[in-house]
Amino acid sequence: MNLTQSNYNNLEDVYLVGISGGPDSVYLLHYLLNKGYKKLILVHINYNKRPTSNRDEEIVNQLANKFFLPFETLNVTEELQGNFQNWARKIRLSFFKKNINKYKAKGVFLGHNLNDQVETFLIKKHQRKTLNFSGIKNIQLVNDIYLFRPILEISRQQIIEFLDSNKINYGIDETNDSEIYLRNSIRKNIKNYEHHEILQKIKENKIKEEQIVNLIKKNSSNLFYITNFLSLNKEEKFFFFKIWTNYSLSLKNIENITCFLAKKTNPNGIFELKQIKITKQYDQFFLQELEQKNISKYEVIIENKNFSFQNEYLSISSSFKIDHKYWEFCGNFPLKIRNYESLDKINEKKISKLFIKNKIPLNYRKKWPVIVDLNEQVISVIGIKNINSNECLKKLSIYYKII
Image (cartoon, rainbow, N blue to C red; front, side, top):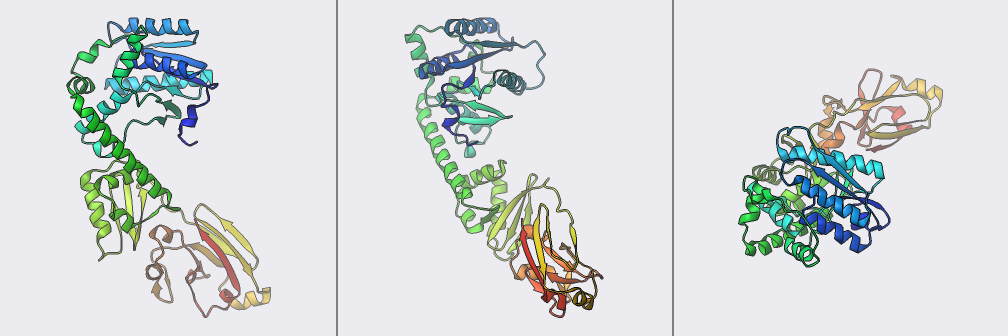
């Protein structure tokens, strides 16, 4: 399913609303009701970490009663394990999943807003990760749960003004004044003039990300032209790897990869990082995750009849134009099709050099089919070279496709 706004445009679908009782989520609920959503389920988690947590739960309970909405609450009594944010996130997603299944809901609405965009950017800046931050996603799929954030363009000031002018009750998290949490410290110390600059930077990053997505979509395979990659600037290269591999690479790694791909004296090679392997082949390169499984060996016995064979790497079929007597005349049977091995030769020449001469991509080579005779001598590199003296090969038609 494509992650587009159409994912939550149907007002008749069932949705959860994550609601804390604070201004952002209370505003979100009124926003959704004003839009005409009819089947909303309020979900609230009381972590029991603040003196006012029961007050916030009561605010949500009153909203549920006022609008005749189902209300699900989770009262967390288990002890904090490790980092609070990670611990709370696991509890939250588990609770969402439980209620999505219970109500057959399409997803969860969340109250992230424009200020959250700015604060998250500054957190990323603190972590030196701003190069690839293109904003909080409007729609996100996490652990098979759709998270919808429809008020990302609305500022917290607009939210407070709306709630106060309409005399709508909401809770204030008193820990927001504490600077022991990084986000709170950023929230208190950010200057107003910075908002515009940061939002502009996020917008630029988003445009760059969309350009890279479109560039990658033009590729029908996992291959990418080196010249196209080298034409990207530093930030675009960050996005390239983030989008294509889902890994955020360091600036140093990006620089090393660029030097590796730009080096013309070595048209083929492999560059390995902890997570991925980059294979360079002439004017193109491709990426693989290092945990990718090895290419399995395959073999097919060729008898004097037509056959077809397919596995995860190869689709192959053959037809014969010979009778049984001619077959016996050829000798050295049965023939066998198997994948190429690194020491294989044909006519005393290394097949690896044939691959280079014919510019066969490195990711195809270990899959490539060869035909061997009874003595395991290679008599054909299918589609590239045959031993001309083998009469039976002249009568054998092979159709193949490397997958």
